[in-house]
Picture 1 (spheres, rainbow, N blue to C red):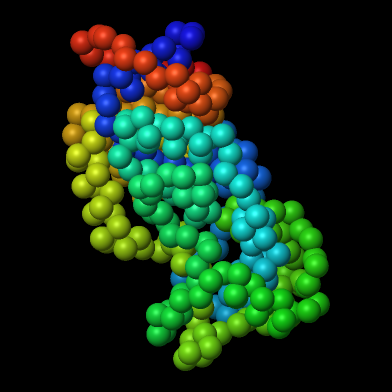
Picture 2 (picture 1 turned 30 degrees about the horizontal axis):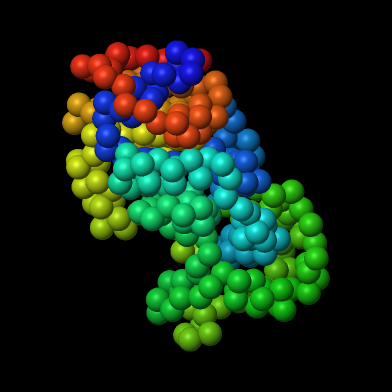
Length: 288
């Protein structure tokens, strides 16, 4: 075990109860693209905004047309070794809760028992008018029946079940409305510019208060909904450990930041956790 790996294992031994926050990087090995590169810059055009979706029919056409092509990539994705390592971490008693910014449900598929889907889940669809709920696969069937011109079409996958389609290709997309009330359907996720339910945020904050430290895995933390927990951990004088292959918004406040091969190091540590005796961890370590 090298020096960096030993330091990570040491933190896990000194602080036995971690709240874990995960981002898109943990699912990249499952074939689900990330929004940003290692510098935190957008890899593709900005994702759909909440107000655009609810106010503009053409935005909903664009979303559902692209989602109809991109959803199977998320639906068929399988959990990877990173998800499995977090299951091991939980089963070792060192993690009481995973907060994920992902909407793919791969933590649950891997076997994690305590997960909060901070931004919702892509496998469900809700009516914004009457609250009726639908499985995403049911909506997929309806969309394909309404849009035979796009059936079997292939396009480059994008994050969160999106796909690259041109404006011309989405112009003739037919949208399926709620079969109960005819209202507007929306995936059960928090779009950019949307609001996370207050009770969900409260559960996360309570878990952070009860934890010994915050462990961030695979997130650039550019979105405030995740970054706020880092700030709160520091305010509570708890260790903040970040494992991410690239810069993050919270690098300067991290107790320990591991950049290169961060996820593989985590897998190595969780596979052979052992107690290490030391009074307190070193502060402000940043490994590139």
